Length: 324
Image (cartoon, rainbow, N blue to C red; front, side):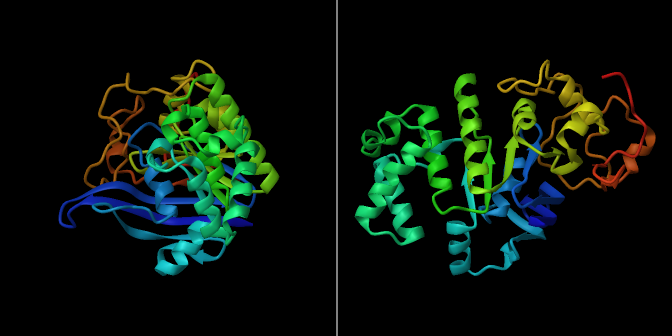
């Protein structure tokens, strides 16, 4: 059963008369307990899609179309009060830079305790005890000491563990993890991913994992959606897409990674043509300028996903099979 359903999501910047399209016509679904990976290079629209689910697109950005349903709640139609409750208990979010979400002038314990008091209604003493317990649960040594620390006194990995504790404090049904291992060393990345997977299984959460790292996607996800130029270009089970990618962009991403290993980041900037970036709406294939298999028909072909079997979709209708 689907917990998250995103239909025809579009996000724009700029003016209404000259919009710059960041995300266009995105469809996603995540079932209860499932992990969906959203992968693509920087600027493809991954983080914006994730933030839209929390209705966190700030001016001058705007959601211009679409429907987002989480557990039967139409997120774009929620009132302010309903939206606050939705963010407290239904969905948690881990951002790629924990320093931007942790208030530098408040101690770690104060921020955790405040969340527990606000979201769960605990009194001060109960919230403190639970906060220390949560810090211990996410693998932070000497949690009573860290409770009194300021964010700048912690390492990047420790700050990310605090963010995981904050994001899961309300026992959400869906966890949005936006590049949760960015800027961490390989060993710390592995520890954070193991922690996320353990907590997800323990609490039976579904998860949207945003990453440009195919190793992370391979380790963590059930299905993957590949994103380029604000559009989904391919979806399907992780192993099926790794074994037999159908879209040329997916192939280039996979060929850019020497091994499916956490910490190895996909890079495609060595290929000719402009990269994924904001621009006017293009109805034709957004990858045509970089595609090694481009042909005349691509200039007028829409980006509509088509089913190639009962589990996989691709936006490329042409036969482009080449040696991997």
